[in-house]
Image (cartoon, rainbow, N blue to C red; front, side, top):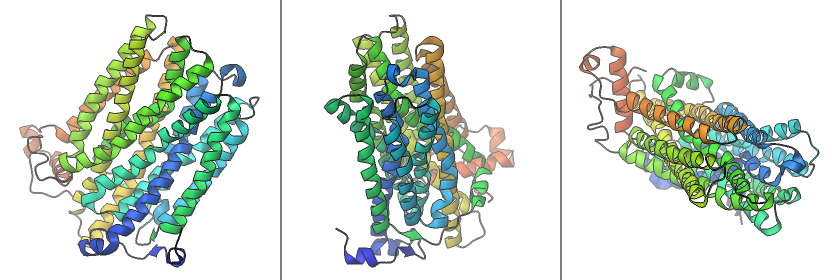
Length: 502
């Protein structure tokens, strides 16, 4: 029950400096924690609405809605695309309107796609185009990640950003498996008939209102932020920013893409194995939530390990394991292809375990890639001719802007996964080709991570090009500030005494 002070207090903070240790210990950390809790909850609901169609398609039998497998994969790709694009404007929204104000608005905006889904899922004669439009509106939930991450980036000091950002993002990511669990509960309790999907929508209408009310009561607006796309332009002039965005395609793109697709892949496999449509939907729902849940829970630890060992090292490890996991899934799928696309019990187990490994390790990689961003710009800010407060503000605003951009680009990886799977099923009636493609992509990501962040420079590079030397110093500073003093000992970079130019 909100107290009178909660209802009447000012929600505007005119000046916030998370690096002020004295102010942090005197109560700043409690303010940050309160904002983090409700930011996580609102982002969590956003992710659930963003992925609502991964659940709705389980209630949409082909003979009733006349949407084939390829069409259902495209229904998953559309909100992923829209959510990714919206992350760019959402990045600066909290600085322009205030974190509390924007969280209230962006939560209430989710009522639109949820109400439309509630109505049209009960209208099986609805055109496919209409469903695509409604799915696109569900993409509003995907934008919430960028505004939430940019907001929490402001509240926490550099030394705690990896854990705080990982917890914020991981708590949001959990929205994907939770809505799948709600769908499972509905299917298990009353069946997979399309009318029963209404229960899922009604649950989330209530949760959306709770998220908006919680933000209104307990969150704050930090007023010493700048809503300026110029910071994003500045961030994108740094070559490492584009590398980080590319790596995020492989980590977050995999997480969100598989989250939309996993249930459908399982449902197709169970139908091929002889299950009736209703039984296949139930069996798929019983398993589909596990991967996104474990991947979400792993994300904060990716940030925490990056704080300790360095973001690039943890990211490289993640891509190595994801390559092996994709190989397992592709191999299992190929064996099923040889059996008339019917997966045996052992093959299905290998398929599920491989998928779950992809979820878990992509979650770890999400946290480690995200941690690199604020570390990089904190290190780069040291070359600016400003006082410490100015450098901190520049690093904060620039890294916040890049988090949104990287999140947008990463979400496009989810679009790619659904489109590649759609193409694979349309041409071969199997996902095998898609997973060979994914395996090769993870190898490329690992190679890029190593080449840019961990490769030992040649003697000529170490003493030659100013651009190379600056990049080496830049990344060295970023990784050293990840939380341990010798994070790059033996990693390949030769230290320089120069600071990177701004």
